[in-house]
Length: 334
Ligand code: UDP
Ligand code: MG
Image (cartoon, rainbow, N blue to C red; front, side):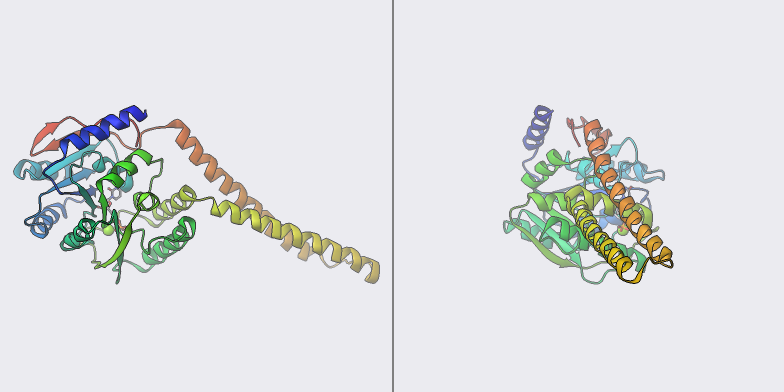
């Protein structure tokens, strides 16, 4: 397994050379945004040796057709087609496996991250940082979307220790060695920015603009987003389960103290008869904690289960460069 990875990484390195920057964009039903995205990236990167890696994450609209047309007309465009919808982060990982640049920048297809900012990230990478994160100063998304993201960011920072301000912003820059490490370490439910943060030796975070989505609406429903948040939290730390253990200790201590109190009260005032509802309240509280604890343990067991199965995170159907099909990279894991 590791051998296959090394082979893959070697092939990637042999292929690189003249390209300084690979821009990786996951695409899920973005037909209306693609032509504009390509034009904006080309314009922003004038004078830079770059490639644009578009990863189709099982789109149901005309995205693939448009991507193939772009690849035929423009030699800098590479297209990775996944067999089915595998999620934004799996799509980014698939894109990583074909990149050839010394640096890689990821970007969303909906132009919420302005491509004009890519050179700012490139400048930081050239300066020697191995990871460039970004945070959105004035975020233009719906209210609920922003609140959920904030909660995810707070918990992620707590889980990872000192971290970045904005894990949701996918406009990010990676040095090649970090990219290779991310591919090799990617697990089920991988969250690329957080994983890279655990790898990077010299990360930096810079402010970027944020725009409204050009076409269509977010491909994340609130539920999909909360599941991503839960994946992220349980994927990078044992903090939640430790907090629940601490809560369990606190509840047990309080419960014991309460029992002692009731016993003493019985000796002094006699047996109580009206305390039934108090007991119910306590019982419900304890049961809530228990359910939460069981759920959390299940979450970790589920992750172990997913890891043990070692199913691939994505499957590549086809890779095209300049309109010509090229062999897909060897991917044993991720
Ligand atoms: N995306 C993807 N697979 C998915 C969902 C989203 O490749 O299952 C892509 C999508 O096309 C876009 C990026 O991930 O390029 C971010 O998605 P979106 O804009 O819907 O997320 P938001 O901006 O709401 O976080
Ligand atoms: Mg978006």
